[in-house]
Image 1 (cartoon, rainbow, N blue to C red):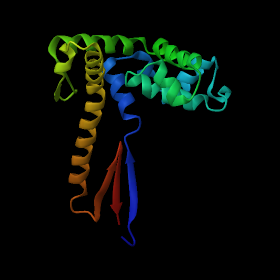
Image 2 (tube, rainbow, N blue to C red; image 1 turned 30 degrees about the vertical axis):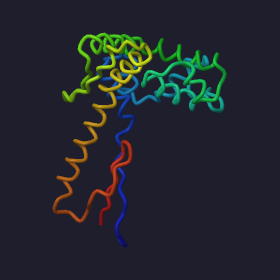
Image 3 (cartoon, rainbow, N blue to C red; image 1 turned 60 degrees about the vertical axis):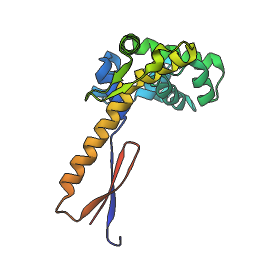
Image 4 (cartoon, rainbow, N blue to C red; image 1 turned 90 degrees about the horizontal axis):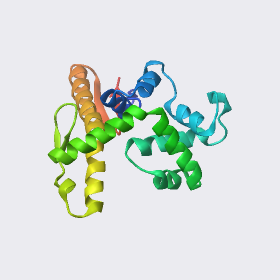
Length: 193
């Protein structure tokens, strides 16, 4: 509308923050508390750099892509494909993530065990996703169901938080000349006078 402005609210690195909180990974929590660049930290570890200014070319981008791949349970082949790098470089990135985030890897293993025992995963707020394929006879189906289940606490909790943010924002906008226009991934877009 003429005279209105768009305001964007971004839930910065929401899934990473949820993963850090749920897993209790000290390195992730340190990155958040000290406002450090998570993607640069992974890249620096993978490529032997001492500080961010030493990163060359696409190295931070590789760190970012591998972080999100690892956060979602992807392996070396996915990292190599996503980053368009040789398998050896993808292995370095994967190994760096695992080394930096040992507690997160342990948490993923704990989640896999719980999902296999119960047949479901749940968000921080208690919303459940049932995954009967964890007991399937087909190994591929079982592995995929466990991978999906491990992602439920992270992605599901992030979705729950976004829904809560939408609700609270809608409530706060009542009586003001502003309204929610859209929600794109982890951003709320508001049109306001």
